[in-house]
Length: 249
Image 1 (cartoon, rainbow, N blue to C red):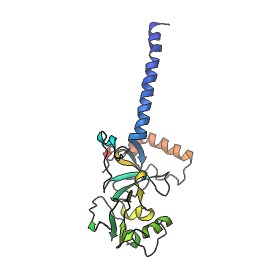
Image 2: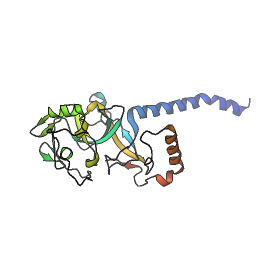
Image 3: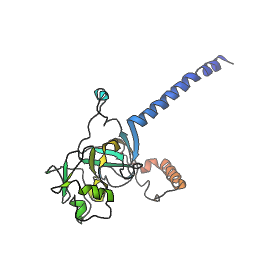
Image 4: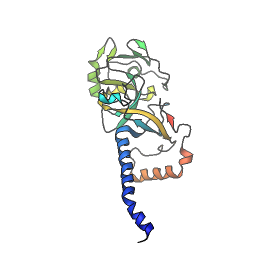
């Protein structure tokens, strides 16, 4: 064995240690610090578009205690965009904007949100519907349920309305989509519990147009492989460069 070969063999433990360290750091980051997330619907347009790929900060909403002294934790604020486990099906991840905090009294009148009797300024909201839908636009409505409202939420909501305002219970948040006329949100399925909130989107690290427009509702493995191959071979054509590496706010 030559001297160079002996050096190469002796470097293996250090190489393995380095790779293992990198993997551990990556697993820690994905588990505790950031998580990748894809926008699947139009409910947050035009803040977030279908095909935006996000990095979600899982650190920012830490619990109170010793770690608050050394980590950049903060409380959830009205106006924050949050990623959370969908309360109806926790295996799904949703992204919406917080509009009401625990203890708030909420009401919508002709699409305008009022918190504790005062109108909420929402420059990020877009309205696309020309018609007026009473339940959607004048919330809460307890006179008649609509088909899209979950039964459990319909029963719970009716117990929390006082003076035509919805009272947000402790430990819960009321969220809405920025695309206010085309968003199934807290109006339809209820509050987001604090423990269901994963974190806050930080950055659009990639944005792709027309990537999943023709993807079936229940795509097969072949469909996904085809779209992956298409994305790889057309990455420069489908990338929305003006949105890539944009901060989310």
